[in-house]
Every structure is written in C-alpha cells, then in structure tokens.
Image (cartoon, rainbow, N blue to C red):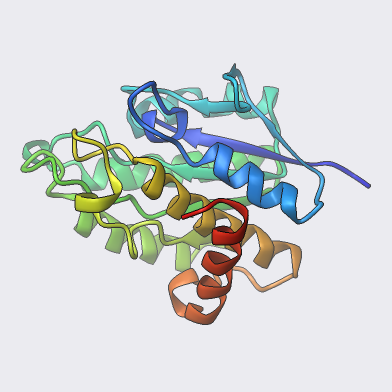
Length: 221
C-alpha cells in the first residue's frame, strides 16, 4: 500500500500547546481507524506527528516560507488553516486572502497534482481583535470555489468558541479539536472517493453527520 503524505500548515491552532489542543492527534486516530496509510510530514515534530504549525505567526509568514518549506516537504495533501494573528483595526482581509492565494499558487507550481484543503477560520471570542473573521471566511469561500485543485473545509461551521475554545477564546479545547479533525477527515475521505473539486463540506450535511458519528466511535466526544 502506497503511503499518502499530509502537510498540516498553519499557526498555533495547528501546532497546539500545553494549554490548548490541536486537531492532529484526533485526525490521525480517525485515519488510522480506516486502515489507510497516511503519513504526516513537515519541518517540525512533536509527540503526535510532523507538522508545519508556527505559533504566533500569521499568513504572511507562511507565504514567505512556503516555497522552501514545500520543496522540502512536498506532501500530496496539504491542510491549510491560517488567518489569525492579525488585528481587525488593520483591516487585514485583503492581505490574508492574498497570502492564501500565494500559498496555494506556490504549492501548485511545485506540484500541480497536490490536493489542497483550505479551511475557513474557526471563530474567536477575542474581540475586537478577530472581528474580521466572518468576512474573511466569506472571501475564502469565494476563492476556493473558483480555484481548481483547492477544496473547502468549512471549519467555521458548527464551531462555537464559547464551548470549543480554552479560556483565551481563540485556541481549541479537546472538543473543538475533535470537531476540526472530523471536518478534515470528511474531506480527505471525499478525496479518496474521487469526489470532484470544490465539493463543499457544508453542502453535505449527511456526510458530515456520518463523519461526526464515526468520530464519536473512534474518539469519544
């Protein structure tokens, strides 16, 4: 069986910390339960897996390193969740959107066959700093829908910062991390089943329910 490589790209929500959970261990459990051969790669490593999560860094940093990073770690599937670590007062939406577009372009230039799973940004109760996130997510959806080889994972849908984050109102707790893992898992499953590009997770409620039901059996919710 050929191993499929995965690169988890983002900030502290991807990397995790002592005080906050991240989706990678839960996603690995879901993938392992399917007996599929997936391997996480990346320049960093913790007790869970390799990854490319950069705490405290924003989309502009990822844009600046993506070409070198992806040449060294050319994963077949790339999971991207980046949009935090900006301030609403700086009106960052256009910058973040341009950064995401550049990241996708750089990956596709190196590997036109890469499957890029680009997420909407999980909501945050840290306001007014992150007041821009809902409007950013609308723009991300428009970009993904019009871009070949990029697949939407709507991490914002169903994520409740009041229940799914730690005390900072930004980073996922274990419940939030499990929700994120189930969303990534469903779209990876869609790819494995050969579904067409730009299939929207939020347009497949029955599939999402199946994923969440499956997740509850593998990782108690």
